[in-house]
Amino acid sequence: MGFLSIVHHSAFPDPASKHLGECAASKPDSQQWLFRAQAPAARVGDGQPQKKCPAKPRNMSKIGALLDRHVSVCGLTGKSAEEMLLGVNTSLVDQCGIAWKDRGLARTLEEDGPFDLVLLMAGTNDLPYTHRRRNAAANLRALHQVCHRRGIPTVAMAPPLAPVGDKPWRSNRQALLEDMEVLFQGLDKHLTYMDPSVILSHENSLMWDPDGLHFSQIGSYTLGKSLAKLAIELCEGPASTPPRHRARRTGLRAPACPLSQEQLAQKSAPAPEFKIPTILSSCDPGAQLLKA
Image 1: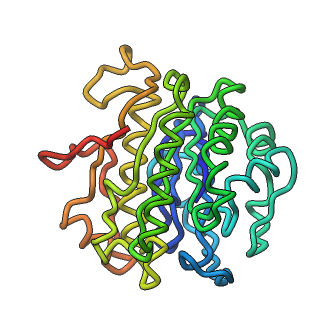
Image 2: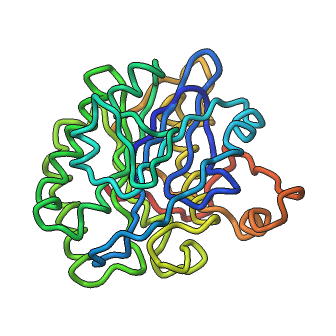
């Protein structure tokens, strides 16, 4: 999984991509968002990583243009939160060696900014290893503070509950979430927390690849739509608020706004028939709030 940094309006996961957390957005001439994700590379509990390398999102710029948004995306396959932190000021190449994501967080913020929002999703690759899991929350806090020191608010995305996760893995995940709750105290003015598992249930096979660890194309899109709504609300305020009264909001609970079945059908349609639904559509009735 990883982190997102925003530069213009909002962006959605690439229709051709399947890797985790592929979305970003920005507002022309005023906002920029970046999303960096630490993608899991091995099945939970496996000692040897699998070569599951996500394809480069070739259509992201096209989607961004359709939405009048600039899109910045970065995924880090197989990297732990510790490795992301150690490489924050240097070059950072994941196990797939993809050149478009070879810089640490600080370098990206300095060289590609200024950014208005960063979404950081990491921790999954730390869970199978006790020593990494124990330090993961502190490493995640440090990554967010890299952004906060530059005046950039962040969204902290918890590692999602994956179908392949066994009982020890689920226990380690819960321990990490509890550590995050403690260590993230005092960051509420700059940080918004969300748990993707509220949006993407581990019991819904439609949202996951056959390996039970990576998001499916529909799952990635569903998460991206909710993140786009959240990012716009954080940077501009609720859609119902007049533009002149909108202001940056932080410390929010992220709303879970899953796609409707009709939109899922559109997502599954052939590419020529694919239509991007509005990112400002209202949530389904009774949509839950994500728990901080």
